[in-house]
Length: 317
Length: 306
Image 1 (spheres, one colour):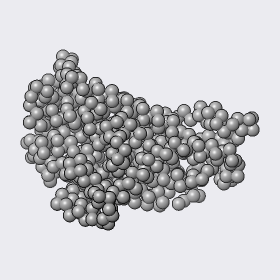
Image 2 (cartoon, rainbow over the protein chains, first blue to last red):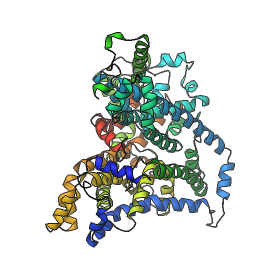
Image 3 (tube, each protein chain N blue to C red):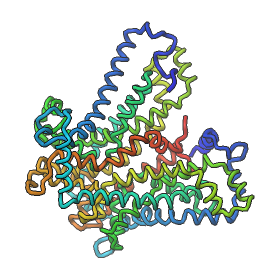
Image 4 (spheres, one colour):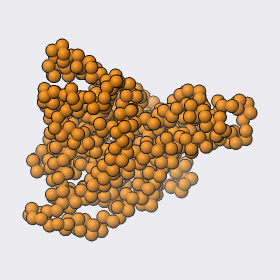
């Protein structure tokens, strides 16, 4: 919790209110009328937070430790889920996908942001960022569907490339060993551009004096990137890493659609979230489904909470 | 971007490029070119594919331009699928997204305002909870919310999609940041001295100033709702109530090129499926074309600048 920097930021942003006033001053000006209004104004949001944030989490937790008859069964549901022959493979699938995807994000997003930032031709830099960012509009099923075309050598715009890599048919492209890479490419294609644009913005915030000083000291562009720009990007890089890690564990729509498109060659139990879905919808085992959901939710919560507590990227007050 | 960012503007004039610099520039150019192609090719190809016949799509140059007749034929084939189901799905998407957007605005703007400018019990707790939930992926709560709504019998009801969509902590956080940094407190205090009630201060002073953040919250809410697949997939079992994202999977199942068991009267050809994909993203794509600054402003909001 870095209160001091965030206050500094607040005034740096140009808030007229904090100018010449103690940051804590607001509390003393607060009146009963204001606090009553405040409570009324947040009530609808508080209600939604309760109904669609906290209650479902607690209900899922309760389901995960009870049996079909409502009795407390401890960790039995978790033991059953862990023992499911599909569970460990699903975890491995998602883990492998995460490794490929996160590494690709860390390497290429940072590299491309640095490179695009170093381009001195203004229109080229702007155009490149625009092209990188547009695929973000295609999320979810639309982006997967588009990639089904691209990965199908019969229709693909890059069928030559696919053939060169040894893929002659759709079934070959989506062979089990390729899937983590395939999902990583789809996720990278959709999401990397937004992050590149953000990193680019962060690079623009590095003061020109620092860059100039480094250059006068004889640093070349690579040295400047490694010793000045990368350390300055650290927070944003970890933000991207944490959010992507949390989002990636949820892998669902990509394997779900691919399973459908491949007529079952890719199983519909490929990812952990799909397994949770199958428990609820195919086996009507809500308790097992809740157990898996709780595990996934816990991973996301821990990542998010640690980041909020340690990151200093967000202003909490 | 200022000139000082350019690696070539320094002590060395442009003409005396060393061997290393030439190499560096070549690598840079290659890297950018490769990734521009990587990001652009699928979209360009998809747009072109909508104007071709299946035969053209499979045999011609991938970047050949089709013709209007084929586009019209594809359009008719798509609209004919299950008696015009696609229009219904697009309508559902619009209904769910816009209804949730309206609720989100009505709920989030006052909440963010109150969090930023007033004191009340549990304020800090609410703020931290908002921040934590905002950072967890929105799919993480889908199955728990399903289990909850299932017990109260709301599954299949449009509310089962609209209400969870309307819970949008990110919008509240954006509003909170906006009001705590951009609205002068002295202005609000002056309005109070002039005799405004608390509600009047909000409605007459704060709201008119909040137009930019309302637009921002609306943008993010709409894009996220329109593109959401998992939540409606789980909540809405019947085809008639699908949004377009879920409807796409029905089209995919009916495409023999991917699913050979679907050959029949109601089958979908590849260019028709491409057209459906374009339609499914058209509204968001249009918004995106004009909103890069918007998007970045939102994603970096509240981030401390170093």
